Length: 260
Image (cartoon, rainbow, N blue to C red; front, side, top):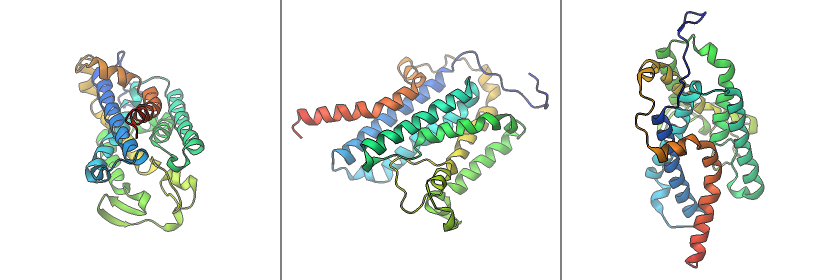
């Protein structure tokens, strides 16, 4: 392998890596189960205090962290990055349009698909530049910046209960600043993933992919194959777009049968 810059060029594998598809599929199953519980609690008014507590929050975070990190990890493995980015970004805005028009009380602005699509589009011009960044430095810096900016949506610097400082209130102004990571006081979204801090988790996935480039070249593409999960993982975008209406329909049908 050779590159004009003297840095190592990543070779896109000829075959899909089954373990990545299986992990994506497993995360989709977890997400579907989580959203089914969300529907039960917030749409069907089930009395379930646990779901409003720390355990459910950790569950939710495990899903979104895995999706975003995995999206960054897999970015360099796919073809037609611009088309993929535009497709995911467009699907994110479809979700926004549908919820704003038909479910305004549960509207979604800058959900996870909008974020991942944005990260992918940003990576189209940035990927070649990032190849000049040493992988260890890039991974450490991405992880550190994600940690530092994890609470930026709430106006502080720090991670979860750890607070390092505050962010100037003047940055939190409108929808554009909300997209970046600075939502105004009246901003509301049931699924909100701004560029800051989540872009840095995506970048951490990208650098992790580079760090593991050698072992992955020696990995059997069929290792850890699980056909049902792999099938789900290969169709992650349509599954994401369709799962919530299907889950809601099943729950609505069940409620009707039970007379509730």
